Image (cartoon, rainbow, N blue to C red; front, side, top):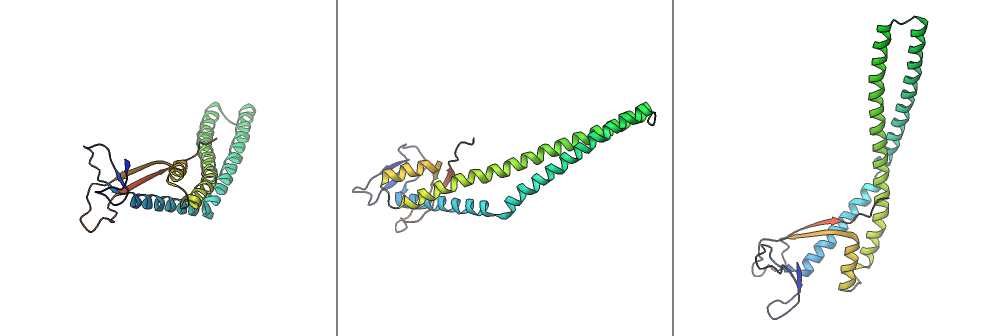
Length: 196
């Protein structure tokens, strides 16, 4: 999409596709820009809500606690394994009982190891998401604070620091007298910083 300036046929700046065969219909640039800013503001508000939610922090804490419990159970299973060997040596268990008991312990150990892996992954994801949003939110807030007072070139540069992609779709022309109707779809993909 390109910007078409004012002229004899159009009275305001317009966003249009330079390809004659494109099915997209042009729209007033101010309407598209307004929708873009509203979309970023909505996304920023959603991020603030997600980060400030107490359950998200509690989830990480609960997952950490669950991981510690699983580690304790794994240590207990190792202790039981040593006792099984001891019982075999003392003659309390026969070879068949020993094998049966060891298989049962190994199944339980495999299950607990998988539970531990999942709990550690959940902790990592919860903490990573919080850290990621904690880095993104201040940057987007800064951009939104200075956006209105910026020149068009600065606005473009600022938006490129927070938006990865913006997809504009409009297939229906506005009728006479309804030029300010926002009958387009604008999909905005935020730009996430590289994770360390």
